[in-house]
Length: 276
View 1 (tube, rainbow, N blue to C red):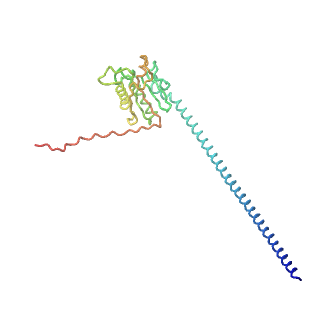
View 2: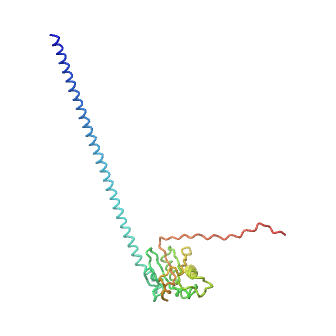
View 3: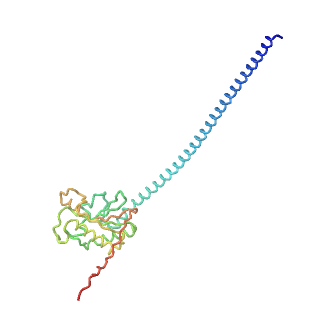
């Protein structure tokens, strides 16, 4: 074989080898790309499964919360219905309870006061309190703060019913006057505020000493002419309605904390010795 033929064979063989090597490299690249694509698809599938599982868990949790909320709402509705029923029952009994205090006592709307043809009235506040309003003329003479003896039976009945029906409720006794300045007994009462305080204290003292109400459950308040039922006062009837004492039976939820009175301390002895 000639030299030229030998070289040609060598070149041809080398070309075949390089061609095979090129094909093999492309095949490996293609396989690697396919594997990467398959892995990517698997990762996407796993991610989708994880998201579906997470969504399923969230839906289950939400369904559980909705179920618990429905149970709480049902319980709240039942409790509310029971409270309304109990309140309605108590309100239905309240007229009979108040009738025990005084047959002449009438029910009025809050803030209405005692009607002209009655001596006392009662109303129920939006906070659950019971307000017994007694005309001032039933309890006191004009300008005075000494209880009339004729008022004792009515106040005794009030105390009797409070002890039987409202033993744990706190009681506030309020004194109110009209806007007419104090003329009679000016030496005792400087103004209407002082008169209203003295009148509330007189009723307070009677309810404790004669009515048997626990002192720790009671307190007084004097408002003078500053909480009128009728304003401005144009007639004698307006002034009469504003002169009143109100006994307020506080709701069961109201608790009053009283600070104990400080004990009187003896005066300190002088440190300076007296010279003889």
